[in-house]
Amino acid sequence: MKKFNLSIAISTILCSSLAFAEGEAEAEVPYTPQGTTSSYITGNVQNHSRQDFNGSDVTSTIEAGHTFATGTTVYVEFDGIQLGKTDEEGDDSYYSNSAYTTIGVDQAFDITESLWIGGGYQHLLHNGDTIQYRPYAKIGYNFNDGMLKGVSISNRTRYQIADGSNKVGDQDNTNDQLRFDNRIAYQFQEMPVQVAYNNVYYINEADNKSNTFEHEVRATWTREGVQPYLEYRNQADAADVNPGANNNVIVLGASYAF
Image (cartoon, rainbow, N blue to C red; front, side):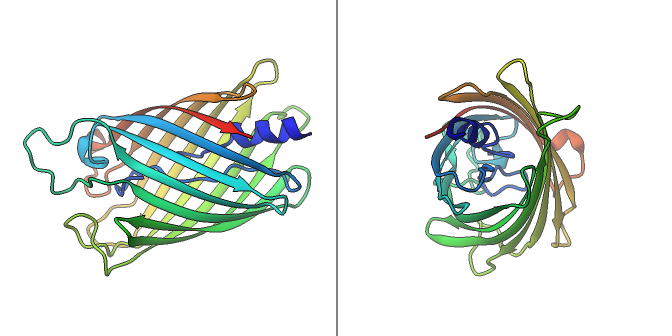
């Protein structure tokens, strides 16, 4: 049972995996059945088609957390770690030179063997200043038998409350958001591979921001031990409705639960 629970924790480690752009990556606690105690660590390298989304054309994310038998998880994430080139013309006004930090707590409840609900809170920091307050709720269902065995679906709804007293770079931080993550995944029964699609929808409250859709597709090798994954993200620019202005991202990462 322990090995099965750890496999679930690793293979569902992230709905997506933070620089403060509209199409950010972000911490997402893995689903772990109640009664299980485990820890996890995950990291990735992201190659961006647009440098201005995350500060450079290559960034990295590292996240770690611990889940108690009560279903409570505490975690921390460092995102927007800049590894690549910045603006070729030297205009770095919209870049951050340090990573963003997310500190969070998550609580999950098993309603049945397949249905679970949860909620939590994330606190987003940059250079020691609070950027956003992020309460959220989530629900999921895992099909454990029948024709849909191996399929899992989930939704997370998160309210992102901006701290207007602190700027992001040289821009005022006043845009509250609602973020909806709708995820479907399939764990192959005959081989250790999981594929997942996550649709992200932002509702932006600022008058100069458009609501946006984003798309994430991931394949994970759900082997025992370290589990590598490959992901493609299409991140939308809320300030520019031209689809060609979106940020296309290739992500190489790995997760480990213990």
